[in-house]
Length: 259
Image (cartoon, rainbow, N blue to C red; front, side, top):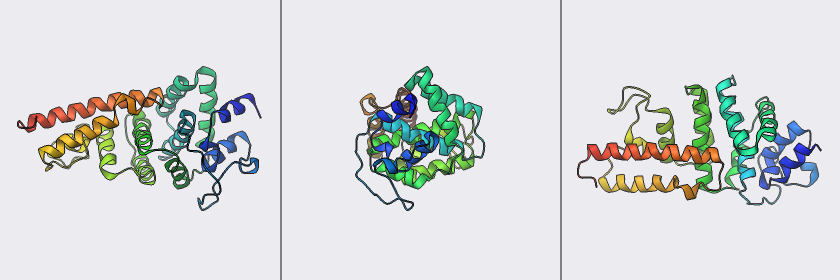
């Protein structure tokens, strides 16, 4: 095994096994099932104990697989998307290793990715907050070229469902990144955003429900909640918190009695 391979797998816990490990192993020419690590069968059944380590290396490996699934969803991997991912890898792994990881990703987009099995492996090994921010980050990948292709949005919706992300949370993420589809009194343009949907609620929500939704969203994006995640995810969280604050301020203007 090359020094790069040894470095990559030295940092992994639960991601070595299962479909994520198999996809990484495809590129490196190694079968993890034969080395004694836990793996999934074709049906996604559990054949061994997972270590719920939740390390940054595991999360980043899982993200790479999901990134590949999103990037290939519209049938064309765009330079803007690759540039976005390249920045993420270089910032987290350094120049040399980041470029090597980019090669892994470029190989991975050529493979068939069992999204359901990959998401199941992630779901049983990470908490909800981690999965939520993974989906949020993936929206940034999808929009790196300045548009959201319907096929990519469909893939993102499927990933969110498999990861167990609630409908209200998904609606909020979608609204902040994509903008409204046009059937709201707040917007006739996809670039304008419904502040209620940004908070994951309906416009008929009570003032107390609005405040509760804002506090809930603010907690999700508090720096302490993403401190163990990559710098790119932390930056995305800070940017999304600004969107949430703006939405709340807009609602307060619409509701003078809301304190």
